[in-house]
Structure formats: structure tokens, C-alpha cells
Length: 193
Image (cartoon, rainbow, N blue to C red; front, side):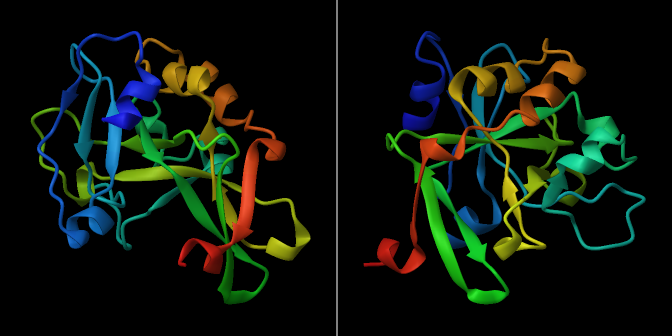
């Protein structure tokens, strides 16, 4: 509920789904915040999206470039925006898959990752109704080929998840990420101690 309170401090009512506590559920079904009903809500979503006509594995990342060019996979979901709350994320460094950094907000407050879903209230949380986080390419040459999540400041996150925000405005929000100086970067091994 800390994630909901930090985002909707002026909202009196929110709904929280029954949230499983086991590690398998947490890894396979991340929490996401949505505004599909009368009040903001938080549910566990299937990680990865595969429309019924999709012949490959579910997609976990919705690349911003694909959203901007109107990809057939993502175009139908642009009006179904959700947020994945987090304390931070791990970012690979260079070609070594074992080297990474842990990135979090400098002020220690929750971050909100833009995401898309096909899920609607009443549907099951499966591949055809799963979610994918929005990612963008990293400009840093040392991280060539890597992407990072599109993290939105609180006001932008509120607009992203608001169903009344026009799609074009939501895409503009996704194209305007936080400045890197607002994040703390540390070796991933430091977070494991």
C-alpha cells in the first residue's frame, strides 16, 4: 500500500487485490496499479503479453520505439496503461551478463514504471491479458543492446495511468524520462549484502 499512498495521496479510496506472498507469485506476477474501475486499484498481473494471434513467447518489454511507430502488437493496448511500482531495477553493464547496477531514486521514494496490458476487470490474468513494461534503448555505448524501463515521476505517472489522458499525451510522457541525476547507481553486489 506504500506504493499506492505515495502515488494517490489525495485519493481516499483505493482497492487492493488479494496479493499472494510466495516468491513464485511475486516473480511471475508483478504488482501493477491501474484505474480501470471507479477507484485506483492494484492487482497481480501475468508477466508478459501474447495476443491470441502471436506465435512466439510472451513479450515482457514494449519498446518505446515500437509504440511510437504504431506496432500492431501495442497499438490496441495504448489506452490500457498501468504502472509497475518498484524500489529500483537492475541494469546490465556492457556485454558481461553477470555485471549489473542497481538503480533507484535518489530520494528513496518508490518509482513507477510505465506498462501496458490487455487485462480488464473480470478477465483472467494470463498471457493474452498479461502486461509488458515500456522500455527504451540506452544511449550509453557500454550498454549497447540493452534497454531500461521508462520510469515516470509522480505527476507523469498519474497522467499515464489516467484513462482520460489522450494516447498522444501518454506517449509524450513516455518520451520524457527522469534526468539521470535523480537516480542512485550502485553495483548490484552492494544490494545483496
